[in-house]
Length: 387
Ligand SMILES: Cc1ncc(COP(=O)(O)O)c(C=O)c1O
Image 1: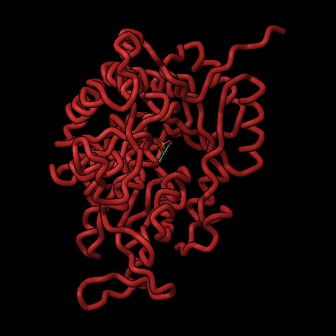
Image 2: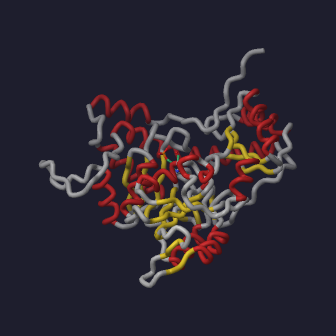
Image 3: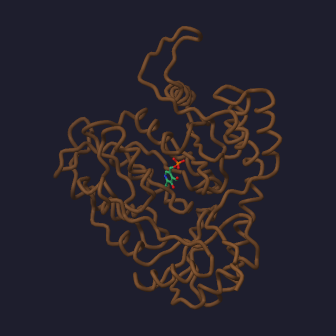
C-alpha cells in the first residue's frame, strides 16, 4: 500500500509576502540585528494585539527570562507556574536563580486552577509585615504569578489579577501559545506587567524561532529593549550599564514575522474551520465547553480517552495512519531538574497527562485530512474533544 503523506501536528505555513521581505533583507545586506523589519514587526504585533509596546526577541523563553529579571525575580524568590506546561515556562524561572512553585491545572482546559491555588496560598504562606508573601515550608518569598495560556486557551485572567491584588504578586503572562487569543476582548499578554509571545516553528505563526515581549509602559519597554540588546548605554562607545543579553531577533527573521503577521487573521479563521470539521465528523463526542469571556486561537486541539492504556493505543493508531499526534507534556514537578522545587498536589495535571493527546491543527490541512484523523479517533473510546 502506498505510504500516506504525514498530517503534521502544527507545521509552519509560510506564504504571502515572506519571500519578498526576506529577499529584501538578503538583497540589501540587512540580515542581522539592525534593519527596518525588526521595528515593523514590533509595530504590527503591537497593532494586532493592541499592546502599547512590543519588543522583539530571539525566542519566547528569552522573553520570559528577561521579563522575570526585569520584575526583580532572583535567588530566594519563588514564582507560581503551571505544573502542566511546556518546560520553557519553568526554565525561564530557573535561569533567574528563583524556584518554581508549581500549581495544578483545572480539568476543563488545563489552565491554572486559581480557586485551588488561592486555598493553597492561604494555608501554605504567611504575609510578613511589609507585604512579602512567604512560603512557610521553604522560606521562599513568593513574588510572581506566571500562568501560561495552555494550548492557546486563555487562563482566567480575572481570577489571576484578583489573586495578584490579594497576595501582592506580580503578574507575568506566558502567552507563548496564545497569539490571537483574547480575554474579555483584550489580547492575552496585556493583563500582566509583561506578556510574552512565541514564534517558534510549531506556533500559529512563526519566524522559525522568535518571541515578543508585550509591555504597557514605555519605560518597561525601553528597559526590555536595552537589556535584550546587551545593555549598551552609549551610541558608539562600548559602554554598558548592566549585564544584558544578546536576545535580539534578526532582521531576516523579523521580515518573515511581518509576513506572518499579515496572514494571522486568515490563519485564525482557518483553525476555526478545522475545529468545525472535527466536530462535524465526530458527532456524539462531548466538546469542551468554552468560557464566554475567552476567544481561543485554537493553536492545538486535543482528544481525551479514559486512561493511559487507551492513550498509548491511540497514539500508536495515529502514528500508523500518518497522523502526527503527541502526548501532553509530562507534568514538570515529576521531571528530573524540578523534583526539588516546591509544588502543590497535582492530581489534575497527572490525570490530564494520562488521558490526553494533541491532534493535528496544521493551518494548511484540508477537510480530507481532518476526516482521516477523525477516522482514527472514531475507533478510540473518546471521552472529550478540545477543538
Ligand atoms: C507555554 C510555553 N512557554 C514558553 C515557550 C517557549 O517559547 P520559545 O520556543 O519561543 O522559546 C513555549 C513554546 O515553545 C511554550 O509553549
